[in-house]
Image 1: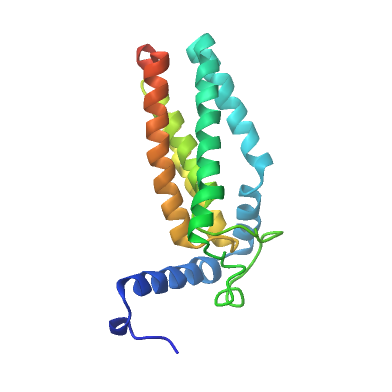
Image 2 (image 1 turned 30 degrees about the vertical axis):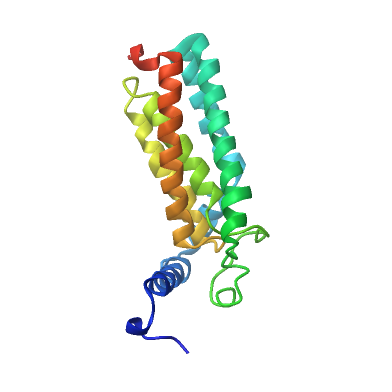
Length: 200
């Protein structure tokens, strides 16, 4: 039996809201075209062309310093993925909605498989928001267009909820962590490589 809102603790209310938002995004706000689109957004092959372009562009702008920039980006994403996938997920041990006995029968599960590791936080969200933040702030003064990477990261994070492998709170927390670590990584890289001088 569902508890009334006045009988639930704050944590229970937040969990209830998370479940309701999950069902809204995963079952109500759907369309066959979006089914295919969001499944494709999760595939690594979709990300590769953009990331290759960004790496090549970094060499055009930063010259030899781009090697350090790339190393910084790889180190940042590797750190974020390690933290999310092996520490945060293990600590919270929250089952993914596609494995949660309470939710599995209520959601639309579209992905090819349901990961066996935890749901909180979404590593896709952490990694892509960290990279978007890193690129945006290291290229500050070079181009303002890279801020659109946040829309890219949002779409990829949203796809995790849409296909049924993460709850909304998983991707929101992941996005927050990604932005924080991305800002730290960008600041370290800008200072270490003296990137403040570059502009077009």
